[in-house]
Amino acid sequence: MKTYYIQGHTSEGNVHLLNQFWEHHDIWFLKGASMVLRHQVLFKLEQHLNDKQMSAEKFVHPNDGKLIDGLLLTGKKLLILADNGPLYPASRYPGLATGTLDLNDCLNFAEVQQNASKIAERIAEADGERHCAYACFRKGREIHEKKEAVYLSALDFNKADETADEIILKWVVPGAEKEAEPLISRRFFGAATAFGPKNGIEEITREISHRIIIKGRSGSGKSTLMRKIGEAAEERRLSVKYFPCALSPNSLDMLLIPALDLAVVDGTAPHIVHPSRRGDQVVDMFERCMNPAVETTNKSRLAALSKEYKEVMQRGTKHLQRVNELEYLLHECYASGIDAEKQRQLEQQLAELAS
Image (cartoon, rainbow, N blue to C red; front, side, top):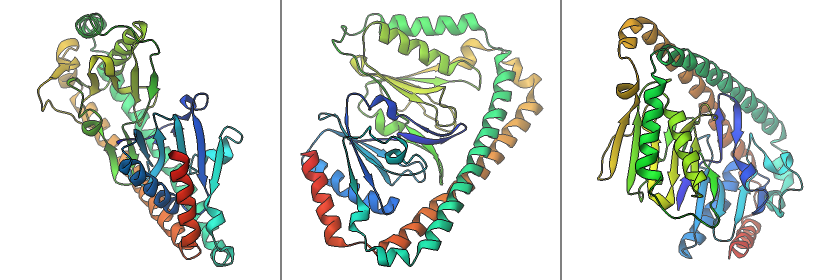
């Protein structure tokens, strides 16, 4: 079961990729109680799916990259989604789900009410810390864009276009036959979490025979290159899975073209990928398309921007650490009020729904 993220803590705030599912999937929300309790229920379902060897994808939450955000049964086109913050899809998208299961039905509210003030305080604090994290990430993107501007001045756009054309001619043009119903999908392969940036590139690409690893610098055209490759594949009616950048979701960090058994991945920080297996190929946009003098000419400015970027992103991570701590403190407020038998019955409902 591959693991992805379907929402992220980004420089634009909370960004999700749910819109691709509304029309052609049955969607069930799992709401109520705490994020940790919702995870426990979905973890039981994950075990059930694995036992039955059912085709599925797992979405994890960007707070820690561990708690389950949702499970997608690809064969059944069924998405079971936890009503986790800051997205809260059940209240944000009323009427779009096929159904809802509510963990509040498993709670002893007399127990929970004893912690009402703590719950309200912790939710409010988590919201504040999250907004502080987003402010840091927004500042980080601004700094990153200043670095991009420096490097962009040294980019030979003709050489960048030639590089894209070369890859397309080698890999896409002589590729697989047109698909009757090509699927265009989007996932995050990683996220800014309480433990810093996390990614699942190696796991996601484990079964892919060919990986083009794009190296370079900020502003060296890596995202544009990937976008052109993806567009060329789409024009030939091939399925493409896009992976937006977890900091700046309008940029691309990876794409997969299953019919070509091909992944194209940005192999630079914070998700460094080195060629490590047969079928890996490196394309260095800095070496191929940029004037290297840009780094010597702007050495002190680039160093200062890199230092400033690192510091502000670390501050953002600290805010997410507190958000994550608060989620587990919230769980403590609910845990004593859960009826284990009712929770087991709800887990059984989900298993039957997935069967």
